[in-house]
Length: 498
Picture 1: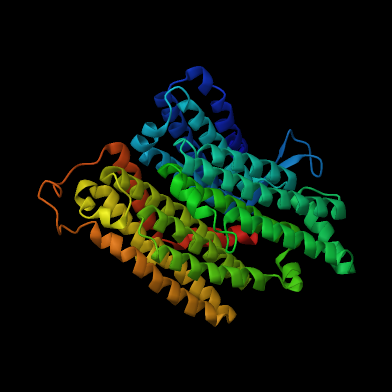
Picture 2 (picture 1 turned 90 degrees about the vertical axis):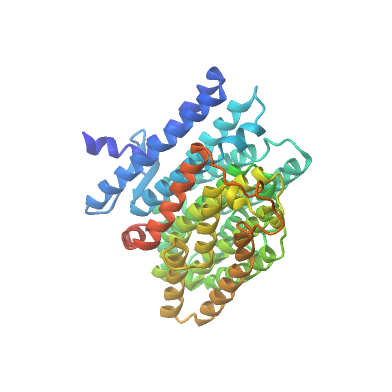
């Protein structure tokens, strides 16, 4: 009985937020809607944690679930493995802590008569992210990419000012370009293979490659899909519109856009690489250098632009461009360890960047200004937020005992073992730039120069602000010290991903 229930977890994780959203227009109370969403997110996280335990006991390491019990290739199929469950758990926890930690900021921005709509958007956003993690169907992935895009725009604009609306329009237009290219690539694949489920499509493509048929259309379809995901994720040179979107959105929305939305798109791409085209096929296409080169450039360009900012939230926003570069650089290495490092970095960036955006939002709200120089002494006014910013900064730099150190160590190991020595140099340069732009705001938080005793008097932050940030801090340190179980699950998940 328990086994049957756990096999429903992927579907429940997708359907339950959408079903709950139907009740919100009737409830029409922002506090009730918020609490209901937070409780649901916690339940979904707990269910996915239980699912991880169940999957570790399965000999195959994964199972498939056919919606409506229609078998492939006619049914809409979900596929749950260790990697999918770990990412679903990480993304759900990130969303839970982000929404919880930005309690006061979000409530101040939301119009009282329409605030329930914001939580409808959040529920659909989580449903779409989890669906992208678990789906085994190409067209279903496209449908939820569109839902993800629309809901992401919806959570960007509670401010209703010119900047947020302009940023939202840029985000929407560029995202739709990426979505259109993704759909075009699916059309190519379906036209060639007659399949939309990933595994049958992969089997058909393997046969075509072996016989030398449709090589050019297959290369074209993969190249188009790669560009689509690069646009959706904000990889250089498609990054210019992302920092504005992050900077002008509410703080919790920035945390979600940077932390999980872009990662969901990237994971769909990883699944397509493994299940549809195959890593060996992509090696023969010789497209990895494209991602490797753009990823390395993004690591440096994003860091340089972050260093040039005098606004603390813009600095954190541009840092996200560099972190996306790390992930695509891991693809370009094109080894199992490179892909594992990229997946671990997705988890690291989800937790750490969300923590940075939430803590930065609290600091900016308390200071009433957003320039780095205006953060002087704010470590005393917002002690938990300041500590969270410090943990996030140290983790981004790659200091041992924090999650970011493990992530950079994984990339360095993958690069060294595969002969990509230049990656070690770029990792070093990126780390130096991380130091240059994170250390100044970290130190200024505790500077008393030019401030009165009243301005540096210690204050207590609310439980709604403190507890989720403490959760972020705990996850960062725990996975920075005890990373082996997670890396083992990621490696095992990659072995069964195809």
